[in-house]
Structures are given as C-alpha cells and as structure tokens.
Length: 357
Image 1 (spheres, rainbow, N blue to C red):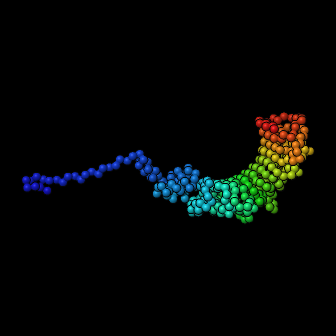
Image 2: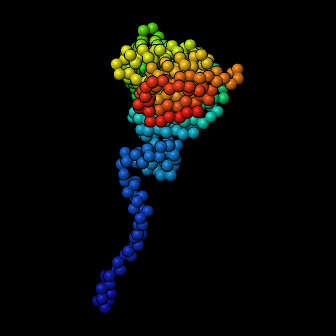
Image 3: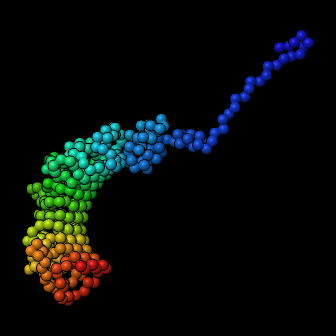
C-alpha cells in the first residue's frame, strides 16, 4: 500500500508469542508419560500394594486403569469386601504371578471362603493367604478350593480348614499350612506334584492318605503338632529325602512308635535323614531313658527336648544316662527335672551348638 507521496506502507510483523520455558518437572512429566505401559506397570509393581497402585490412577489419567494389569497382587490389611471387589477386576487379565492377601483380625469364615474362591478363579502361580482369626465359632470350616495352575501355596488360617472333595492341585510343588486341617492326608492325595510340605497344625495331624494313594514327588517334609499315622505316611513317600518333626502333644506310646518308624525310614529309604527332632510331650519318669536312647539312634541334625517329664503331680526328678548323638549339629535340652548322671561311650563329633537347662 502506498501514500500520496509515494511512500510504501508495510504492516508491522505480528507480535511473537512468548514461549514458556519448561522446567525440569515438565520435562520429567513428559518423559514419564511417554513411557510404554509395560514400564509403568513395572513401577506400580514395585509399590507391592494394589490399593496404592489404584489410587495413582486418580491423580493422573495416564496411569488410570493400569493397576488392573498388575502381575503381582499384594493386599495387606485391606478389608475383605474391597479385596474381593479388586480381584473381580482381574478376571480378564493375563496370568497373575503372585497373589498375597493378609487380612486384619475379626472377619468371618464366609469372607475367607469368598476370597479363596475368587483367588481360585485367578489361580496365581504363587498364593499366600493369611486370615488369622474370625469372629464366628471356629467350628465353621474354611473350605479350600483347588488351584490348578498354582505351584506354591502358603496358608495361615486359624479356623478349621476343610480340604476339597474333588479336583486336583495339578501344578502344586510347595505347600505350607498353619492352622487346623481336618484331614491333611486327603489334601495331599490331591497334590500329585508336591515336593515340599510344611505343616504347623493345632489338633491332630492325620497323614494317612485315602485308599492306596501315594505321594510320588514328596521330598522334604516338616511337621509340627500331634502327628499320627506317621508310619503309613512314610511308607507312601518313595522319594522322601529329609523330614523334620516336632511332637507337641500326644500319648507317650504313640511317640515311641513314631520314633521307631523314623528309625525304620532311615534304614530303608536310601539317603533319607531326620533334620529336626523336637519333643514337647510330658512323659513318665520310667520312659525318659528309653526315649533318649531312641532319639540317639536317630541322631537328627537338630534335637530339641523340652518339658520332658510329667510334673502334673508336683516336681519330680530323675537321673538318666546321656547317650551320644553322633550326627547332631545342634542340641537343646530344656528339662530342669532331669539330671544326666553319666555320659555313655562315644563322641558328639558333629556338635556345634549346645544349650542345657
């Protein structure tokens, strides 16, 4: 455009828009947001808490819903209703690797059953379920469903646990139980691949399997409680290598039979050993020496004898000979009513630790 004097007018250039300088936080936010989902899921896994991972989705749209794709699920001290609701979100997710549920005290057996059924639907590779106490009478059982894909199970349930009546734990290799089990032998018969068993149970531990069932893969066994049917159980474990037993209740006669069974196992199972023998059963004075000799013939790697004499009729004291435990590496005697009058011939050649009371 020109004026009358011939001067040409030009329009001024448009003003430049001020560019906001990005600080470190903006750059970090962009970098994190640009990461693929798999990397963000790994970040959520490190939290080891499903509720915390879900809450992150409330703060950022980029993270929303990623928690439903977690492979490892941890619920610590979350009420059962919220755990059940969260587990329902994983029904269509890829295989769950770890499911770890630890519930606060004071909930019901019905809630435990509901959570176990939901967990069985996911069938994680590893399951840890801690449900220590219920408000209801302990007579009401917690029913254990089958987990077909699970290779490792840890159960801490102080209610009475009832084994499943059908199905198998096809892939289960490791099982740890703490609580009360109606019939442990019936449960073990549904675990054809089980290699490692640990059971700390109140009440009677019934090990005898139904009919002529065997435990073909079982290699390591740890038992603590009132153990019965030990002889039948050991005869059905052709590959057993190591066993540890803690007798905490039961009749002295059954204890003598159990020790004889363990001695026969060491003689007939090639390479089988007793790693721990613990006895917490009060016995008569006349049986103390016999029991010590039977334990010495086994010579377990670790030996614990506590409250051996029955003092229900008042303090009693007795003198016994102390036999040698040739293979024991650790011995603990907590028997204030027993006096070792004489040490029999031999040496404690492998002993590293000794505790006497």
